[in-house]
Length: 530
View 1 (cartoon, rainbow, N blue to C red):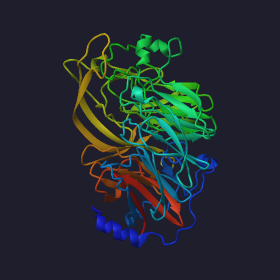
View 2 (cartoon, rainbow, N blue to C red):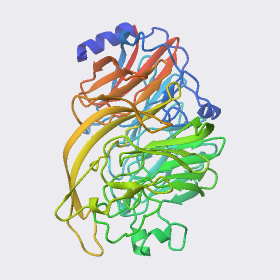
View 3 (cartoon, one colour):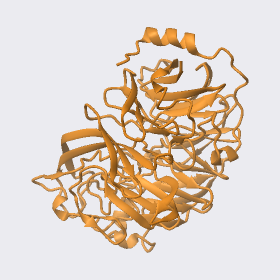
């Protein structure tokens, strides 16, 4: 194990960073969001597809053991006594890295980690759990604040251009999503920490912040989907937050989003029905916000299994024909492959042990087993409320045809406290008993596990990165950053970061050097070949 002491990091950073620092900064051509260049990671998932795959090969399965630290950047002490962590994905554009924590954005040199500018938002409150990162297009940097604002900054110096309210702080919403810039729209989502208000997705004008459209996760009475709720009151408190950045298909002009759990979370006697469009994968027309189709991984969820996991887009062969596909490893322990134009289901399979279903229906959606609903006496359910996978992003490699999931096999006892006709809050409790963490590689054509690598201890929510160098990068619960052979899961390299990874690694190439970049706690680590 390579334990990186602070002294070693500082000395090594001075010894290995490239000495030249060419002209940096400047805006992002919107076309680069459709076809990102090798020297960039211009959006939350690297590109619109959500694959978190890089075509770079300088770092590969033959030489990854020679990876060394290029530099370390630690978030500055802002004098307020708060401990901050980099829960978002860094974005890299024109030699500059943009990173966030709640209320703050930094721009630093991608070659040297030299600070370039810092913006601080004066907060009026909200939940400061984390921030997923920025969106960039043209000369603007966009980010969300915990007190419900979308803020646009000048990319050159971090000066504020405008701000626009996107949710109601008085109703206990908060905002943490990395905005997605699509054509002439800035797409934003909202968070609610199991809030009993409807979630929604919005599009805003990139020049002014003006609202263009809003799509509500929970329909209003009389609208399609309302028949899956018992009454208007249940819909008004329906939940379904949208707290992870969407993906987008430019050819179909469709935005794809996974939605959160319905409310109340566990005690569900007051919301009989499938509770659309919570716990769903939804395709929306980018210019209008109108729904094209939906697929529901967890109808009438009672176990807190948000389906916000990234819908990943790729082209592949299903049933002997080329298809435009979407795949999601959902929190409920199931893996789905859909036609991303129509929502037709091709594959539904378990990627971890589950016991809450009685099979799948004609649409490929799991059928819940009533015996596994939370009970006063308790019932043993797999997986637990944290799920087979949580929010940290998965990755898909077109080079191997495998979908990679940092997964957890778990059991939990689910109890119900409030058995009234109109329960409130959670109305129950869950208590975890057993977990086994592992990295799962799934064949998208069949849904079968191609290989599995078990982690030594449970826990951790690291995101993933796959590359054309036949590598998958992941973090384990012991604070290790690990490179594995993408074809068979053999560990090839690791280093200890002293704290857990906060999101997924990214990679980019500058001046002939491929960088591997990862956030862990309040530190940003950059590795290159040495």
